[in-house]
Length: 171
Image 1 (cartoon, rainbow, N blue to C red):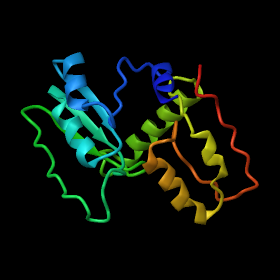
Image 2: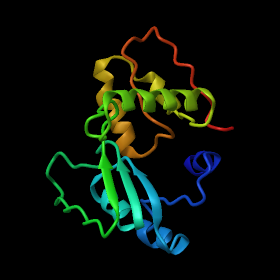
Image 3: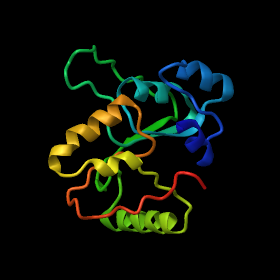
Image 4: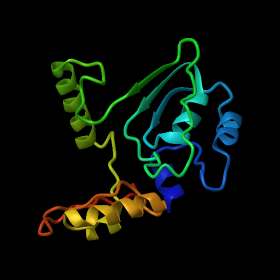
C-alpha cells in the first residue's frame, strides 16, 4: 500500500491528491510552509508546491509527467515565487540547468551513489513493472504510472534476459 511505503520512508503526512485537498491538508499541518519541496509531477501539482513554500523556501523540480500533452485541459500559468523563494528545474544528468560545473555535478552524483549504497537514500521500484519488456512496453509502463496504481518508480526493461534485483519496499 502506498501510504505504508511512504511512511516507511519517513513521511510525516501522506496526502492522497485524488481524494484530499493538498493545499488545505499541508497548510494545516505545516502553517509556516516548507523550506524545501521536491516535486516531480509538474502542472497543477507544481503550482501546489510553489504555494506551499515557506518565505525562504526552495522548490526543486525534476521531470514534468503531469503535463497534458493532448491539449485537452487549460494550462495553468506558474504561480509566481515570493521574496526569497527559489526554484530550480533539472533533468537528471543535465548539470548545466542545475547551475553546476561538470566537476561539481560529478561530485554530486558520486555523493548520491554513495548515499544509495549506504542505504541513506532508498530507491523503490514498482514490482509489476518487471513485466514491461522491450521498447514497445514503454507506453504500457507510462499508462500504469498515469493510472496511479504503481508503488515505486515504474520502469521498462529493454533486455528481457536481465533480472532486476527488486528490493522490498519495507524496511
